[in-house]
Image 1 (tube, rainbow, N blue to C red):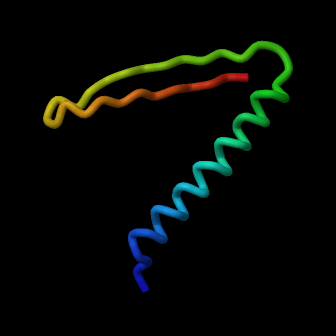
Image 2 (cartoon, rainbow, N blue to C red; image 1 turned 60 degrees about the horizontal axis):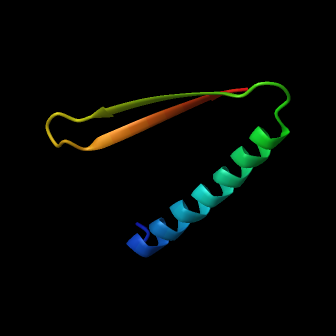
Length: 57
């Protein structure tokens, strides 16, 4: 069965919260330097903006 939109929204929101907490914990426990790199771009057809973030630790 295909889940309802509300169930998909809830599941994705919960996954985001869990992953965010795990990332915060990993970065807090990182020893030494943490480097962040960002890149921003937009889609020419829709003008949607995007930002990518890379973290090395």
